[in-house]
Length: 140
Image (cartoon, rainbow, N blue to C red; front, side, top):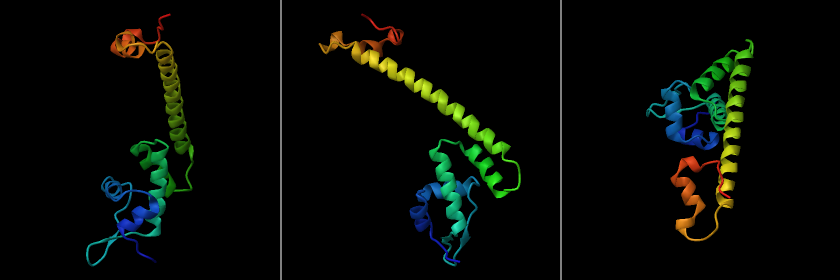
């Protein structure tokens, strides 16, 4: 079984060294064996777990959700209802974020459209940013 240094584990997993140490400190990743020189020696199983965590983080899952998903992964014979519930909750958060971003897009488009490209004292962008009450109420 090939032992992998923390630097190599970081390179192969795409997770930075300090983040690997952090995941170990919060219990998402089991601490690896240590060499006689006290260097961490990772195994392939650590790399698989790091890839799982990295992907879950990229999808925006919170640490507690990842902890639960990892526990489910460690016991593959149980129901996946908890995993489904976690994914559905994340999907709802993403949909809410999309709605919020779409509203932001509309507001920014109106702000830019309302700009007459004149002087700053007549700039609609500056005006709207200075007074939140101006939001979503375009002046014609």
